[in-house]
Length: 457
Ligand SMILES: Cc1cc2nc3c(=O)[nH]c(=O)nc-3n(C[C@H](O)[C@H](O)[C@H](O)COP(=O)(O)OP(=O)(O)OC[C@H]3O[C@@H](n4cnc5c(N)ncnc54)[C@H](O)[C@@H]3O)c2cc1C
Ligand code: FES
Ligand code: FES
Image (cartoon, rainbow, N blue to C red):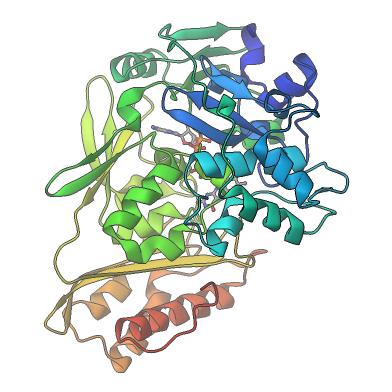
């Protein structure tokens, strides 16, 4: 299918349902939260499940899209569809196509296979809501799907990769899709006002709210250099366009303590497309990656046709949803020093719901234990200021001291020097300050090995 001009930024869901008249894919929340619109998208790197309501048509340029109609027929169901029927997982069936897609995506990504636990099965469906059946039969089907063979059709890849940098010129919007970093930087130089579209999970919901598209958009998905992950002896370098799902796997391999925290990022369909740089560039005060990456002493590598800078994370955020990135610059990677000996890391996200919720407060802390004395203390926090920030007064209280009860109470008192949180729907100022203090206490208790109940486990 070819889309002309201004059509390229429309949600893929509308192209599927309205233009292609394939109405098996459903529309629910239209904001990436219910999974009813999920389809499979395949490119040379593999197949993944995406929420088509927050995926622009331009993002599937040169890719293959599988809707529910392409998987099986009433006479010959796809094995996952059959498992759903056999477990009686549908009443109205509105959520069913999305749930089938989520289960296939989980099989392909190995998030669910024969070794998967009950928690893995439920995590694979965290982004799919059902309004009427009830989850027990759906989870029964998901359990059965751990071992059913896939049909193979969903693994077919497109044969060639597009290389043409200009994708679409319409009356009010021009969309570019550069194929490599030099072309991207050159486009950025020529069009500093153009909006960079990475996973689109933030931008496309914003465009829907404002009901307007920007005049120039640069789609980043084909820039291979941004999707690379490199390990050196001293650092882990995660490309700006690496998805949250891939980044989480590397982060957990070096810092397994972060697994519980990262498990609460989005849903599989969000994490399959949301990117690391997209998360940081939104500079959301409650974005999940920033506090953790601060505690890991991350810096951002930023480039234009003439500059190449490396910026530490706190200095990158300049205000509420603002960064120091210049108009002609692009974030190209996140640089993380590898774990030193005796390094300790703690990371906490507090939100009203376990899955798919925006945090009230996040806190991540790290230090090196030098014979009982804390060195190189870093505390990153979200939800306490107008941007993700480091708690420098708390860090000074803890630095070069033993981590004892008196010291932690002094550190909690220092929180007031670092932050004066606001009241909003997710928590009052008093609640947020008290919560942050309790998270510091929890950090010490975990460090000393005190028995704490982990409700998730
Ligand atoms: C249902 C749902 C659940 C979510 N859950 C979470 C969650 O649990 N935790 C959380 O922190 N966030 C969450 N988010 C927010 C969002 O998904 C993330 O912030 C995501 O990482 C944004 O990445 P993206 O690639 O989709 O960004 P995009 O929407 O493509 O872009 C976001 C911003 O980053 C800029 N940008 C992207 N790449 C670059 C680059 N290389 N250089 C310079 N600028 C760049 C864009 O121009 C834009 O300004 C959620 C969103 C949705 C819709
Ligand atoms: S319609 Fe709900 S996630 Fe797309
Ligand atoms: S079966 Fe009706 S919404 Fe799930």
